[in-house]
Each structure stands twice: as structure tokens, then as C-alpha cells.
Length: 357
Ligand SMILES: *[C@@H]1O[C@H](CO)[C@@H](O)[C@H](O)[C@H]1NC(C)=O
Ligand SMILES: *[C@@H]1O[C@H](CO)[C@@H](O)[C@H](O)[C@H]1NC(C)=O
Ligand SMILES: *[C@@H]1O[C@H](CO)[C@@H](O)[C@H](O)[C@H]1NC(C)=O
Ligand SMILES: *[C@@H]1O[C@H](CO)[C@@H](O)[C@H](O)[C@H]1NC(C)=O
Ligand SMILES: *[C@@H]1O[C@H](CO)[C@@H](O)[C@H](O)[C@H]1NC(C)=O
Ligand SMILES: *[C@@H]1O[C@H](CO)[C@@H](O)[C@H](O)[C@H]1NC(C)=O
Ligand SMILES: *[C@@H]1O[C@H](CO)[C@@H](O)[C@H](O)[C@H]1NC(C)=O
Image (cartoon, rainbow, N blue to C red; front, side):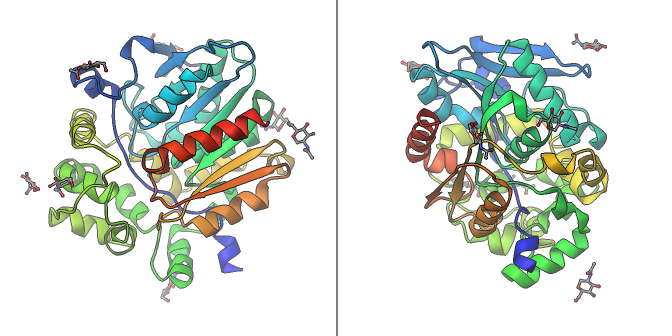
């Protein structure tokens, strides 16, 4: 029962990358800067996004949504693959990141508003119906798009993080920590508290190498001991601790991403957490009608079996509870960064799912 209550909880962290850095560093595996566009969405915020139209007749357009603390660069392996396969691609830097606007008032980060922004991007490219694929907090937005704009998508794919049910936020952050402590033996969302606290941006920005490696760790158990629990990440950073980054990020990609974080700062990106530990997101979710809470179209979930923040079993449960249509679940021996670490399997599984829709 506690377990069920948790089903959608979770989420995390990181990966960064950014167009600014992309433009100045070597071109290895970056998204082609000449294909980026800017659009001023309905609410007057400028979004920066990669756009490539379908090159084969009948191929749909994919909308790829990254999470914290990344940019569109997170999707480098998927963009290369699906573009070769003839698919259209719309890949934004999400609000607070990369070349997109970076308001520092958390109210701007309500899921209903960000969902509207995503539809504005599709409108700007005359895409009537897309397939949306999200990772981490991008996957939260996939769920909200299914709630608010189901008619604009033919299918919904979630990676690492499943359906973030509004019911999760009916519990306070303190209650969530107590429940996760009982269920998992550690507060797997404890780090939300640090990310929402005054001064977290400065602490991260002053220890970017330490932050990057614990967020993209080679040793995934560190998520349990030194990332997720209450107080752990702040202590790790203040001690400026070191650990090896995972080999799914090359040294070149790592330094590029760290430079990007240094240039952009963390203040805006952390708003994605402030809306969760306050009542902003909970209140915003009240606008979802009961009948829109389930997903009536095909769903894909890519579970990361070594993700100890967005724990696979509870993420799978969240997807099974919400999906009323065909649900495809694939599991990967991977940590949180499944589209980097298990890129080839993820690409081929998504392709066969899409081809069979
Ligand atoms: C850019 O990409 C091309 C083609 O992959 C490669 O030959 C060239 O060395 C790259 N340039 C840099 C600076 O990495
Ligand atoms: C975007 O639109 C708003 C009004 O909707 C306007 O105030 C703002 O200047 C525009 N920004 C840019 C960069 O065009
Ligand atoms: C609920 O879903 C329907 C489509 O099934 C959509 O037209 C409607 O706008 C959604 N309601 C809200 C409040 O988003
Ligand atoms: C969380 O657990 C602690 C210790 O059991 C308890 O004192 C506290 O009241 C609980 N808080 C909430 C919000 O449930
Ligand atoms: C943290 O450690 C790195 C090397 O791992 C070093 O370059 C940096 O100066 C240290 N930062 C602080 C604030 O001590
Ligand atoms: C981060 O990881 C890289 C790659 O394993 C390593 O060379 C570097 O020393 C690490 N830095 C810190 C601060 O942990
Ligand atoms: C499932 O999705 C397919 C394709 O979008 C649609 O034709 C069918 O009506 C859906 N079934 C249910 C039960 O919603």
C-alpha cells in the first residue's frame, strides 16, 4: 500500500550539456547548431530547440524532452539515430536550461504552463500529432501532456521515470521522506530538499566537478548513500568529494557539460524542484479533470534497473496503473542515464515500438 502510494515518485538528476558549450567545443557527437531555432511561445518566453523535419514520407515527428540538469544535448544519440531513420525531431532545451529562457520564479515552471509551451513548439512547426519521449523531469511532462493535450500525440514514451501521478504530491515532502524511508530504507527524494533550499545553487556552482560525477556516477550505489538521502548531497558537495564519472559520458562531454553549467548557473534549473516541495505543482495539478488522468494511447516505458532514485519497480507500477492501452515495458541494466548508457538498445527498442504503433 505504501509501495503503491509511491508509484510515481522519484526523479533526479542530471546530465548536462548545452548548446552554448556545444558551439565552442569540438563537434564530436553534438547536435548540429545550424538546425536550432528560437520561438517565442504564447506566454512570451523564448525557447531554443533543435528541429529537423521528417525526411521520409509517413514518418512521424518525435518530441524529445530532457530532464534535470540537462539540455537537448542529452538526446545526442537518439537524434543521430532517428534522423537517419527519417523521423522528424523537435528537441527543446527545457525551461531554465541551455538557450531557452531562464526565469527564476518557480511559478513559471508549473507543468500546465510547460505543457502548453511544448504544444506551442509543435504549432510553430505545423506538427499536428507527434510522439513524445521524455526522460527524468521530461518524463513528468510526458505524463502532463497526456493529461492536458492527449489529442496532439499518438503515443507516449517514458525513460527512467514513469508517470508522475498528481496523487504523489497530495503528501507533503516530509511525509514522502518518511514513506520512502520505510519502503526503500532511504529517502530516495531527500535531495529535493537541498535542491529547493536557499543557497543550493551557490553550493553546486562552487563544486561543479564533484556535483557532475555524483550525478553521473560510475558507482551507482552512491545514489543510495551520498545523493538521494536527506542531507547527503549537500554534505558530499561541501566536502568537495570525488568519484569517477560513468564511462557513458566521455571526458570531453563531461568537461563540455560542466562548462555549460558554469556559464548558465543552476538557479533557474532548481525551480523544477521548488515547485514540488512547495504547493505550486500540487495546486497546478488540480486543473487536470479526473477523466484525463489516465493515458488512452500506446505507452512505452524504458526501466533503468540500476536507478536507485527513480526505482524501477515503482516506476513500472506507476505506468501500469495509468495506462489504459498497450503498454510496452523494456528493462535495461543501466543507471538513470539510460539513453546514454544503454543507447543502442534504447534506440532499437523505441524504433520497433514506433514501427509497430
Ligand atoms: C568535426 O567532425 C568531423 C566529422 O566527424 C571530424 O572529422 C572533425 O575532426 C571534427 N572536428 C573537431 C574539432 O572535433
Ligand atoms: C516575446 O513575446 C513577448 C510578448 O508576448 C514580448 O514581450 C517579448 O519581447 C518577446 N521576446 C522576444 C525575444 O521577442
Ligand atoms: C482533457 O482531454 C481532452 C481530450 O480527451 C481534451 O480535449 C481536454 O482539453 C483535456 N482537458 C484539460 C483540462 O486539459
Ligand atoms: C516522520 O517521521 C518522524 C519520525 O518517525 C516523525 O517524528 C514525524 O512526525 C514524521 N513526519 C511526518 C510528516 O509524517
Ligand atoms: C574541488 O576539487 C577539485 C578537484 O577535484 C578542485 O579542482 C577544486 O578546486 C576543488 N574545489 C573546492 C571549492 O575546493
Ligand atoms: C570525475 O570523473 C572523472 C572520470 O572518471 C575523473 O577523471 C575525475 O577525476 C572525477 N572528478 C571528481 C571531482 O570526482
Ligand atoms: C488504444 O490506442 C489505439 C491507437 O491510438 C486506439 O485506436 C484505441 O482506440 C485505443 N484503445 C483504448 C481502449 O483506448
